[in-house]
Length: 100
Image (cartoon, rainbow, N blue to C red):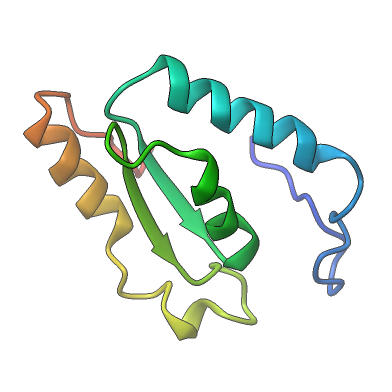
Protein backbone atom coordinates (compact mmCIF):
# COMPACT_ATOMS: atom_id res chain seq x y z
CA UNK A 1 0.00 0.00 0.00
CA UNK A 2 1.29 3.42 -0.88
CA UNK A 3 0.75 6.43 1.33
CA UNK A 4 0.83 10.13 0.79
CA UNK A 5 3.38 12.28 2.60
CA UNK A 6 1.80 15.68 1.90
CA UNK A 7 -1.53 17.32 2.61
CA UNK A 8 -3.72 17.55 -0.45
CA UNK A 9 -2.92 20.65 -2.54
CA UNK A 10 -0.24 21.82 -0.07
CA UNK A 11 3.17 21.39 -1.64
CA UNK A 12 5.97 20.83 0.88
CA UNK A 13 3.55 20.35 3.78
CA UNK A 14 5.83 17.48 4.80
CA UNK A 15 8.98 19.65 4.89
CA UNK A 16 10.86 20.56 8.05
CA UNK A 17 9.15 17.92 10.19
CA UNK A 18 12.36 16.08 11.09
CA UNK A 19 12.31 13.39 8.42
CA UNK A 20 15.22 15.05 6.61
CA UNK A 21 17.74 13.96 9.27
CA UNK A 22 16.43 10.41 9.09
CA UNK A 23 16.58 10.19 5.30
CA UNK A 24 20.05 11.79 5.24
CA UNK A 25 21.29 9.11 7.67
CA UNK A 26 19.72 6.32 5.60
CA UNK A 27 21.17 7.62 2.33
CA UNK A 28 24.64 8.02 3.89
CA UNK A 29 24.53 4.50 5.36
CA UNK A 30 23.44 2.95 2.06
CA UNK A 31 26.10 4.89 0.17
CA UNK A 32 28.83 3.81 2.58
CA UNK A 33 27.85 0.16 3.08
CA UNK A 34 26.53 -0.86 -0.35
CA UNK A 35 27.78 -0.75 -3.91
CA UNK A 36 25.93 -0.31 -7.20
CA UNK A 37 22.75 1.26 -5.85
CA UNK A 38 20.63 3.20 -8.34
CA UNK A 39 19.32 6.34 -6.66
CA UNK A 40 16.28 8.02 -8.27
CA UNK A 41 16.26 11.64 -7.18
CA UNK A 42 13.06 13.40 -8.18
CA UNK A 43 12.73 17.12 -7.53
CA UNK A 44 15.21 19.67 -6.23
CA UNK A 45 15.12 18.65 -2.54
CA UNK A 46 15.84 15.03 -3.47
CA UNK A 47 18.55 16.05 -5.92
CA UNK A 48 20.29 18.00 -3.15
CA UNK A 49 20.75 14.64 -1.40
CA UNK A 50 23.23 13.64 -4.13
CA UNK A 51 25.92 15.27 -1.95
CA UNK A 52 25.48 12.31 0.43
CA UNK A 53 26.09 9.68 -2.26
CA UNK A 54 29.45 8.35 -3.40
CA UNK A 55 29.08 8.71 -7.16
CA UNK A 56 32.07 6.44 -7.82
CA UNK A 57 30.19 3.49 -6.25
CA UNK A 58 26.59 4.25 -7.23
CA UNK A 59 24.36 5.51 -10.03
CA UNK A 60 22.28 8.68 -9.66
CA UNK A 61 19.35 9.49 -11.93
CA UNK A 62 17.79 12.94 -11.57
CA UNK A 63 14.50 14.30 -12.88
CA UNK A 64 11.71 16.69 -12.00
CA UNK A 65 9.34 15.58 -9.26
CA UNK A 66 6.43 13.46 -10.57
CA UNK A 67 3.79 15.69 -8.95
CA UNK A 68 1.05 17.25 -11.01
CA UNK A 69 2.81 20.60 -10.62
CA UNK A 70 6.08 19.58 -12.23
CA UNK A 71 5.83 16.20 -13.93
CA UNK A 72 5.68 17.83 -17.37
CA UNK A 73 8.98 19.61 -16.67
CA UNK A 74 11.16 16.53 -16.99
CA UNK A 75 9.68 13.56 -15.15
CA UNK A 76 7.61 12.33 -18.09
CA UNK A 77 10.05 10.90 -20.57
CA UNK A 78 13.00 10.60 -18.19
CA UNK A 79 12.76 6.81 -18.52
CA UNK A 80 14.14 6.25 -15.03
CA UNK A 81 12.50 2.86 -14.68
CA UNK A 82 13.93 1.43 -17.90
CA UNK A 83 17.27 3.15 -17.29
CA UNK A 84 17.41 1.62 -13.82
CA UNK A 85 16.80 -1.82 -15.30
CA UNK A 86 19.55 -1.25 -17.86
CA UNK A 87 21.99 -0.33 -15.09
CA UNK A 88 20.95 -3.36 -13.04
CA UNK A 89 21.42 -5.59 -16.08
CA UNK A 90 24.95 -4.24 -16.61
CA UNK A 91 25.71 -5.15 -12.99
CA UNK A 92 24.28 -8.65 -13.43
CA UNK A 93 21.27 -7.94 -11.24
CA UNK A 94 17.76 -9.03 -12.20
CA UNK A 95 15.54 -6.25 -13.53
CA UNK A 96 12.71 -4.85 -11.44
CA UNK A 97 9.11 -5.51 -12.48
CA UNK A 98 7.82 -1.96 -11.93
CA UNK A 99 4.20 -2.94 -12.63
CA UNK A 100 3.65 -5.18 -9.59
